Image (tube, rainbow, N blue to C red; front, side):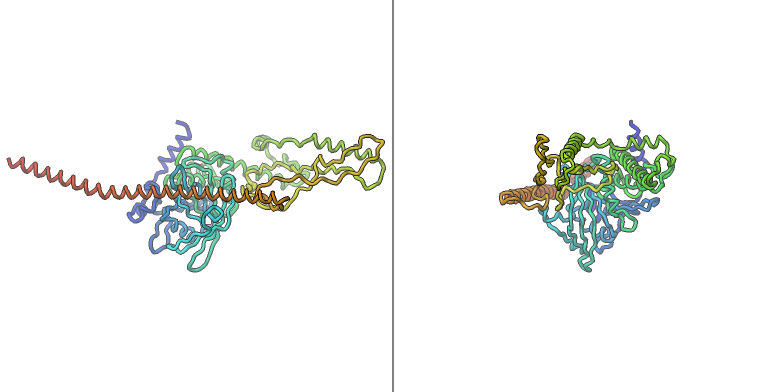
Length: 498
């Protein structure tokens, strides 16, 4: 058995607590649970303020040492989506972190509890009359690993509204791990920078399908990195194992597999290195010009570790074209001699590169959304091809350079920018591409909705059959049992009568 498996087994053994589950197991609340073996403890469950029910499968997780709170919950059911939004409103939550897809492996893992939007073939608004709330989609930006949405939650009775941020990580498989620690930490940094995890707002709601595996991994990594930032980690307090065992006191079963535990360690190490580099850059930048950063007392070992963590250097600039430009400019200047006319040689700054320093801020930079934003900027710099032709011999006077060539046409998609089409044919082509793109998107959304409907119908048929089978077989079995008992009694009485 590997060390990691041994640690995970210790977590499962020592982190299984026998706290009361009275409310979660009650007959009236049992249908509100997605999984019968994932239930909230009585002492940490979220209590709703509503006339019909006060129950939701959600737990409040507190990390007192760093003043961090999370609400871990299951993916809402179709019957509990209204309770989910009521919890968001009453807990004054600013951010929702969703770590699963609504359908995974042809199974519904979460209800579509937010509006898809008209651009995706859905509605821009959803109303939950049972709790008097309305949810509107304000904006949506799709990135490589996640989708960021801004929602507006409105109380219909008073008209009061509140902005809720929705962070949807879309590439985390069930019982699996994200693609890389770097991609996960980018997502985590986006959530942190939004202020959704701050103590000044309500606790963030974190959910996957059951609210224990992926959700527990997210909370564990964020908590440990925050402890490192605040210097809380120590030999007895702040270890990964101790923090995870303490978190399991608030919600059962956090982190479901050894792979999720291994990924938690990897993400914590990668995030800690990233933040250490940020601190080193900030320290070096505060020393000012003329001060050697090596004189700050840091050892050579630390410098070597920083060098190992640094990314590989960027490829060198294109020296061939730059040298050729400089040479041609010098020849041009020499051919001009001492003539003081208005003809000037080519500028040496045409191919100026703004590479700058490699700050290794890939994890920090705001990842551009896949939706292309419009911009009206145009590149007017001249390349090497715009240099004037050199005269063939010194006998002929140099001719003035031709006017600069227009920049090459940029091939764009129909949604790339605001450039006007150069011809009616191009306009027609763009419009046709846009129409095809919208039709494809609508067909894809229609196919997805049909799959969801089919799966829901299959689930309803299965549940109805199980219900009928239960109520048909139970009386039948009881009747057979009663007949057997009566027959046995009759047999023994007949036997004793002889």
